[in-house]
Image 1 (tube, rainbow, N blue to C red):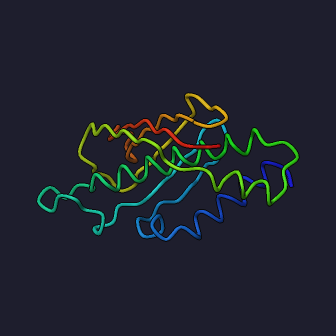
Image 2 (cartoon, rainbow, N blue to C red):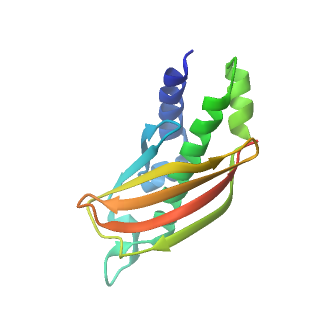
Length: 151
């Protein structure tokens, strides 16, 4: 299986088999070593401040973390040689968030939220990603930096 097909298969698997992300409505829409993208729609169940009707900060952080973890995972896949399903599963089973910093720039308002991530550094043990969240109007809502265990 080529790497592009693997990225597609992993995207489908993660979109359909991660209950927490499904609960929040998070969908991976782009998954490759250069950039990942996660999108989700506004839902009243995601309100963190009922008076102002803004997105809960934990939802923002979760979406940033998913995008960062996804691009870190894509970099793991990219570095693999002689890929087998077993080797892929073993490599991806090691991924985990070590540190996540979230900077909230504006209240989370909008109909759709788009989170993008790119790798700052990808090593054999640790990867660092930079993430941004915008709404459908392009308003920059938050950004983050994630450090991920990858090996």
